[in-house]
Amino acid sequence: MWEILETYWVQLLIGYYPDGPLGGLAMTLMLALVGLLLAMPAGLVVCLGLISPWRPLSRAVSLFVFYMRSVPLIVHLLWVYFLLPLVIKGAPLWLVVLVVMTLFNGAYLSQTIRAGIEALPKGQYEAARSLGLPHGRAMRHVILPQALRNMLPSIVSQFVLLIKETALGSVIGLHEMTLEFMGLNDTLGDKAIPIFTLLGISYFVLCYPLTLLGRYLERRFAGPSRSASASAPAAQA
Image (cartoon, rainbow, N blue to C red; front, top):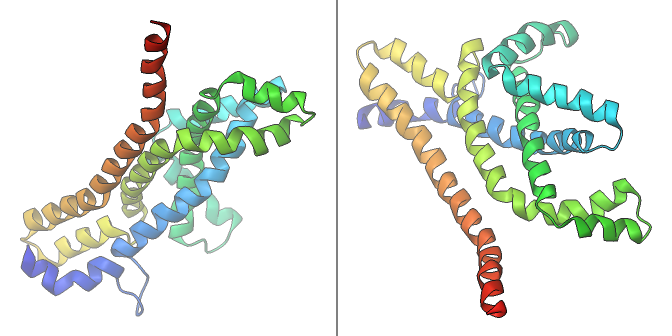
């Protein structure tokens, strides 16, 4: 395995760049990071539609979320792969994957944002409205900043999922990390076991520290609430 890394580490890291398309680990991380940055505002917009007091809008958005979460990601990818070039001629493959990841993860993050909002005391929203703030400003200035604290562990977990989801780009020929390893397997021929072992280790090295970070954030943010819950019976006693 070390011989493979020593010989082909540049290809696995950045693909054939600058003589060819960017790929490998760099493409995987770029897609995951940009996908998260785009999925967050998309999820926020979807969440605001879900909790909208206008019933037709909330029902339409709920149907969109249900559809995105019910259909496999690869089906969404194939739909966009064939449809996007009809709208944008010559659309690059990374754009196809990015659009799919933004919509798909935006639908999931909308539930995360909604849960973060619902975890706050209802008095927060009522107090903001009693001060004369309209619904939109109450959400933007009072509710969402507080909800972000509850959302951080789930956002880290979603980033882990995004890293793994980029592997589906290999289905349509995007030169991300999985496709680079598959191409290397085709080149070397008889090195399938060490090559795909390295691929698994690569994803593990990327995702496991982030998983630990998510668990740490979850414990840290749950600490004050546990302490408050534990101190309440003691005070009553």
